[in-house]
Image (tube, rainbow, N blue to C red):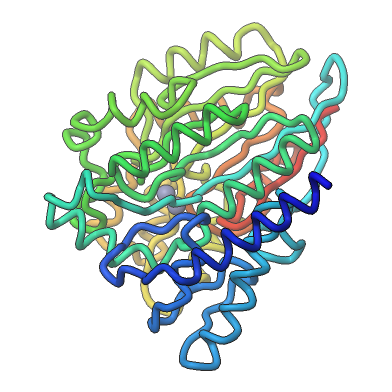
Length: 364
Ligand SMILES: [Zn+2]
Ligand SMILES: [Zn+2]
């Protein structure tokens, strides 16, 4: 009986939502708003299948997909092969007992609401970015679902939000409070108006406190121990780390405990450098930390790229510690939005996660 009533209520909710006019100016999106997008005539990514449905036929497909998405929300489960996919790997770290963690990154939640409508540049930023990341909330839903299913810690390697807005900070806070999340910062955690600013430390400092309030652990440097394995999160999102981070890292690895290192920007290794350099068909740099300067020059790096990516002393020392410490068992990274497993040393792998991917690790 209860089931019938809830089904009836769902159908009533669905059709009353269908009758509501969509506000074309509303640039916020939320998985609960998906029904209101039915009357929008612009192409939008489908939250159900991740495809772009445009035109009259597209609206028709989207209508049915939105209904599917709506009921998936009620059931708390989305179809496999949708926006989020999961890869599986094992880390032999010498854990007290085996456990799972899920690595995700670059979710880029990118919305604003009326609290930020007064800031025209931010409204413009959100308009430019909303179509890039329409499924971000669904990815977070999928992640939460999988983490609960496996009773797994979520290790998020940054860019959880796309830019700093009230709504994005609320959504990040909601995600980190409802789930067990251990995170490091990505460059987008400190982005206000995207593309208008590079690795700007003053800008980071201007938003750092309010961004940090949306996370449970310190996203610039944190340590957490799970079953005898130490997770260390270090913010290297501006391609470099600072001396205080190096000192803390050195202290943390000195006890010899097995370590899984979470960073936003991957560390340099020849395989991942080659992968990134071949990625696009126009000149671009690789997006890595501690690339040797001679490697940059050999690969026709523009001076501005060298300027941005050149490693400072702390970063070079950090890199040397990573490759020489036998107790670092795995590195998890993001930033490039692609899946790649890099061999940093013969015994150390670095796992780069795609933006719609969850990497499920069994740690033994
Ligand atoms: Zn990103
Ligand atoms: Zn990034």
